[in-house]
Length: 443
Image (cartoon, rainbow, N blue to C red; front, side, top):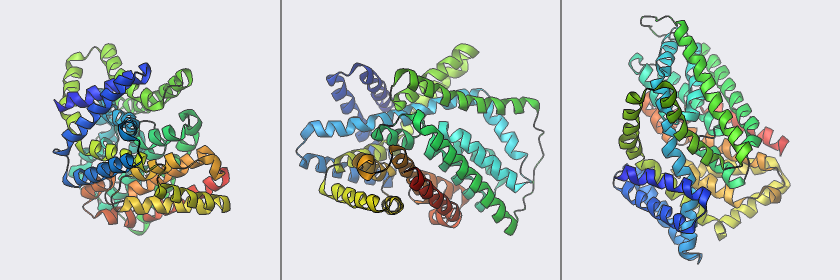
């Protein structure tokens, strides 16, 4: 029943986006609140209580601003695009599974076991391709391929974090990019070159640092039976690359032609692609059970995400215009007028401190995106977006409470602090320095 509620919320939001009917907006807001309440009992303990605290704080702050039900409704509705995105985007994994792409990835990675540098490049590169589409599911899938091989903790912690964190900066299928560009009113086509360029730079630096680290700490690993990478698997890997390019390209084309919100386009593409796969392949007997599994299992497991994303979004919206938010905004504006470098460092430090104690990035970065004005700061909108997304990416890797860090630390068998600081601290520091330098130049 709860799955139907969440899916219905997403469908009605998409309808409301085009029809702009006030009663539909109230309907979808009501459904989202019911979904939030339904997720309260099912979510894990930490995200449940954190979500309740952030949602309560957001509602109280917004109510005290004398905006009443209208203000609360607006705050909830503003986060609905993001909830629709995280709910519908997993549909894209269905064609990938049925198309046999994952099996080819497994064969490729197993063939690299005797070469740690190549294996690291394989893991991080595969995540660079899959994460924009599958989110944390990409880490789970790669781990399924390699779990029985018991990789060294350092290799897992470094490869998974670096490969995943790149997508946070550039993928339109990610909450970070979609949210920041939405709040700053930046078309994705204007940002994509900066996002992908910086992500590729981060990936390259990660591989260079691992090569240097591995030279000082040689990793020896016994390999199992080597399975030749047949032409069939090579073709599948090439198709996978083209599949990702097609997805991103189609989103850019639709945005250019329609001027629709990128989040809405991504949601529509996530629905359309599996249907096209079913029509072209005529494998409905395999596709339909996957769609049923998506409804009954994937959607029903979104409790933590609904709790955190909705509550953090409400809190970020409520903070806009408050004395505290205005104080931070005035402070950052003053810094920006003195030095873009100081401004960028201050933003990064503020967000890292907030997220390191468990507050979700949506609350911290979302509040800044809604509060800060690039014109008043004296910098370009693109610079502000890149700074916020870079900060989001670094905080995701560093915070021991982020979903990525929790999952990778569990896979690697080390603490979240070790995963973020010990194994990836140098990489994140270098990326931060380069990123702040680039922002200072283009700002």
